[in-house]
Length: 383
Length: 191
Image 1 (cartoon, rainbow over the protein chains, first blue to last red):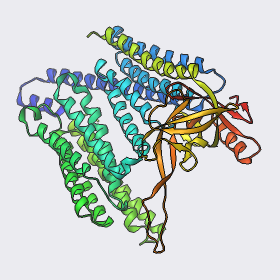
Image 2 (cartoon, rainbow over the protein chains, first blue to last red):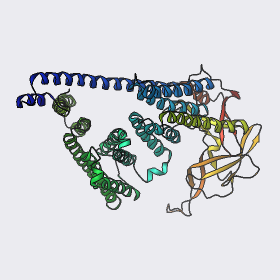
Image 3 (cartoon, rainbow over the protein chains, first blue to last red):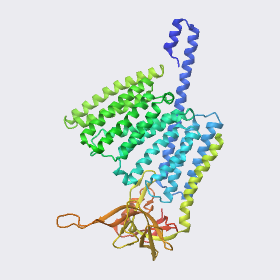
């Protein structure tokens, strides 16, 4: 995509004349306006779908007694099918609202879950049952491929984490094998890898970003929690083995040139593979040479900082504002957490808050300015 | 495959999941044996389904000194089949099996906790290999969903001790159980 600077350079070089430059500027402005408006429609319709979906789940949770069970099931299942059809209709048949269709398909995926939980509620199936969430994932996963739905891919990744959490608390034997934070980190890396696999095939490339995004956030969240003093760190022998397998899978894709060239975020992918291999080493060492709580805290702080730096570098190189914003967000959280840890007891509290507030304000101003600069640079002038 | 086919397949797939779920539970409700089980409720909250009452049945804790067992060796997550007999409509414990018993009414459960009993000698050392004393078992009928706020009401009725809370369940020939209703002093709770 060309920008204002390029048009001016072409005019200066004599490649185009002033009239042509004016026409290009007008077309460029029109394109940007159209592009912005498309993005707004997608954002509003997706947020709307999510809000209605959450509303339906809360309706189920309220267990409203004024309506009979059969009527509630018919109402919710009927709405699920009806909205699903409307989504299909707007996406494929009536081309007037092509951006509303995907949002309605996402809404039908949320309503499918609400209907499932309503039926489970009526038959008093045990609370916080992981199998129900798994059925929800299985029920809506085909939409990712059938309708090429990136938002449903995001929903499936989120549900996957809810399933993992519920399963961990349901199967208490898992507590002896792995800590919940390692399980999240491992799952995050695995979901990220699923994103990479999607990036390799042209037909399903649309699902690469949502899987990678949610996987990255989960991995960063788990690593962030590891930066605190969490008590005794433990891992069973299977844990380093799984991390190692994940690391090797990453390497198998990233070291092969033809595969690597199909991916759009090689540097970020490499950063996650480094984390997987590093975690294999750390957990293996923990089994044979366990270290103190403080040592792990320091190690994980260093790892987290290194990962954020790698991601910032990757985001800058790939001109990906999403990765840059993610790295900056977690960087601010890390500074905030460590500030609380180190200064809470050293300074009088009033001074602590004033100083903390000032530090955060300065950091946010610097980071926001940098982020805006990068965004302008990446999008060729568009803010 | 064209998009229309995907639409039809999705709708059929979803309806199969919903109706499969309903049929599975309705089969138990319509063909099973009805019985009442004694409980002690508390009031937590489910992530997606709101308020519910946790049902802790008398049969949730099985004392192996009092209940006959086909085999006394159990491990976490073991499947058990608890034979029951009806006494005035109440399901009373008869025997614990590791395989489904023939010609007996039984409910299927999973061992979720093992409570051990051991004797210590004068030096505080364990004299013999610890024996399993009690089993904590889950039958898949430990939650009863109620309208928002009603859970605490039911719980308080239980704790005041003035009213008895029981659960009417239906158990089919495969040992699968479904809750039918909650009974307060023998009366079905209307919600």
